[in-house]
Image (cartoon, rainbow, N blue to C red; front, top):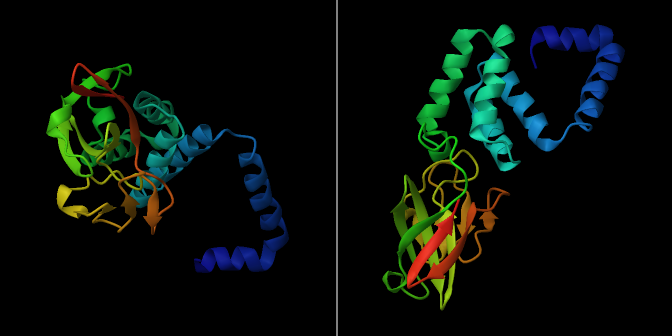
Length: 208
């Protein structure tokens, strides 16, 4: 805490306490997506890169579309100014999230051909490219689990070398996942992003 904030707490702690309570209570009336989009704007305003990445991924997880994120930034232009919007956009582009790519940002969910079923070994996990993104595919008999290769924390693209047996560990912050279920088993709290899948004519299809 800064010296200035310490001073304000010391001399007007009663007023600040009511104010912080108001902020906390008012947030309860917002849906999670809106609350996280507002947090994205606040982190852009303060130019806090880690906070921007954190709340961006939260907003996406809560159902915000990439276009809604961009629109939120543009709508906040009077407060943020162009320089901060450009700063935030550069960070988003560096994160290389497939959904933000110009040719994908308005694309509606569709089924994509991941590969021939026979190319996936029972009990093993493969990392395969598919239509601009990377996937982890785990096969158990006739069942398949298809995951985004990006960590749900800060969308780090997890390499195949990070897979040891059935445990996948993100190299950036060491979130660990059980590839058979997608659940996070160490460090973090969010599971891998899972895509619906099906088999048609000997081909594995996934939807996003």
